[in-house]
Amino acid sequence: MKKSTTIIAGITIIVIILIFLMLKSCIIQNTKPEKCTVLAIKVTKIKEGGVKDIVFYKDSTEFYYINRGLEQGLNLDSLNAKVLNKTVTLHLAKVLGGITSKHISQLALGDEIIYTEFN
Figure 1: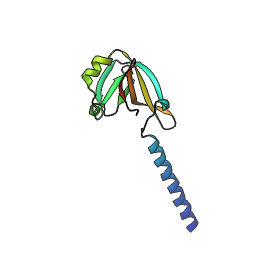
Figure 2: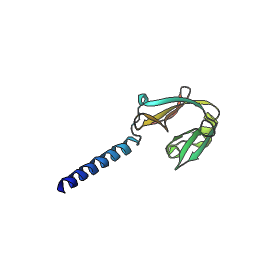
Figure 3: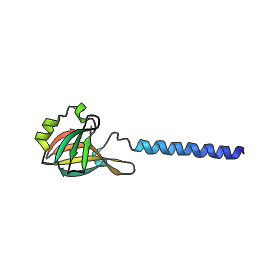
Figure 4: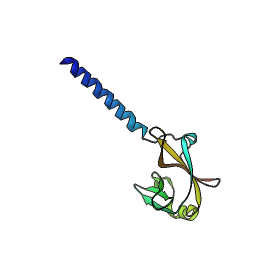
């Protein structure tokens, strides 16, 4: 009976560690340009979403966002004037095994970088 308790405890610890590592890999931190997916989209709509996020729509269903962009000095009116109906370049962060997220790490219009998380 003692041996089975030890095995169950060991399996429980391994499962907890695996869950922790999986959740940690979903957090976007210190994104690097070479570890992003680069995508060019034509922005059809911009709006606030979530908690002060700025959401850029490629079409009615496909969107990408700058997390808490309104808290970082970006403004919806100026973004609408600058990028609405124009093609922008997005650097999208990757999470969990290289899956591309919808999180914008950098937004550029031509050679002008409008927003970046890169240091």
